[in-house]
Amino acid sequence: MAPHFARTILLLAAGLSDPLNPNVCVCCLAGIVPTTALDDPLFATELRRNQHRFLNAAVSYIIAKGNALRTEIVAVDHRAQLQLWVRQCMSRTRATERRLRHQSMLDIWAVRGTYMDVELLCIIVHYCLSMVRRHSSQRFSRHLWPTCAEDVLPTGSLETVLSLCVLMERVDATAIASFALDVHATCESELRTHKGPIIDATLAAMVSTIACLDRSIDLGHSLGGPGQDVSDYPMQRLDNLTRFFFEITVPLVASLSATYVVERMIPMINRALAVATLPRTIEDLACIGGMLFEAFHPSLALHPRIEEFRLSRRLNPEDPYRSLHQILVHTILRRTCAGPGCAVTERDISRSLSLCGRCRIFRYCTQTCQKNHWRASHKSSCDALCMLFNATGISSSQFSVAFPVDEFTIACRAARFSGEDISTLARAYGLISADVPMKALHGAAETWEAIWLRQFRAGEDEVPSHER
Image (cartoon, rainbow, N blue to C red; front, top):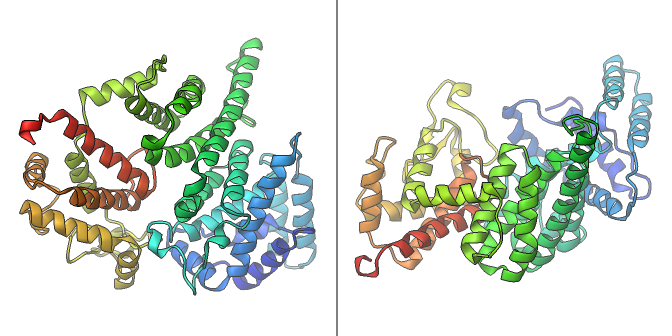
């Protein structure tokens, strides 16, 4: 932990808490961010246990910045204000090292954007929310932040997310997208009634960002160049918004309006794919477009990337049990502790991690990490895996990375799972996929659960009724 951590946090909390006259030294903010993976859980635990005021003030400050952007017709450069706060903080100390550190931060503004305060606060809050977002039953605690939904949604569920959408649209910072995903995952039940307006806001932000990209490309062509200004290019914003769009859309595909999909969503995805260059953005957009087409079959021209996605799905249909086998093998192969917020590897501690005694899938560095994971999400996934092994006749000790995928798939199909069993397996697949991401595509547990169920239902449709 950084020296004088508690004192720095108190000063930052005081500066963030005054909405009329805030004072945020980004040098001090940068100084408390962990520099090693081993420090991450200690940092997050200390903040969640003892610094509720700072975290509440940080979230409110982030959302206030988004609200201010919603009313700004012309973008305002706030760098002068941030520099003033750093100079004021530097003037309070005579310690040479601290003054040099603050001076070096002032030099960074020659190449960095105007929202470094928001970016750093998003990084800090992300450390805390990432520890609690894996399972809805563990969202809030009397003793650990967040204690209630209002801690994460200070201006109400809809207004908070609308502010985050504006920040993602206007600011080139991946940390904001990560924070928005954390908020969505932590307060999914509170946001469920506002899914329509949230999708509307995300679409509007993506359309605005695509228009910026179109203008940049057209300007580049008119000047005879490649059409890319690295310092102001909004491609990263499109990637950030796509990540959020993927997260909120995939679980809701079946409940969307066909008219809305045809008139707004697919045309926007086609436009986005026409300008996107980042591989992850292209893959996410093609996946969303392909799922929407499969659900609604609109008579619209599709971008070639969506057609490629659909063709690959037809040539290589994804089997739900193969997907389950794949994530289980991938989890076994990981040599990283599965404890929430813990990233300790076997190389870090020079010894083997301990396997869960029931499912023998997840590994842990300590019993504390195992207990924390059990309370967070593993109880559900472990019970589901034990049900899977009992139904298929495959013991947990028998299943390993060398267990044949075809044999596993045949055993699963022979088990004749009930509808409730399938829902349980889908939930387990979602929880494990969120705990142990392994693909370019990302998502919360609910997103992966919806994807697995879609694979299962697609496979059922292809099986003749007399063979079921």
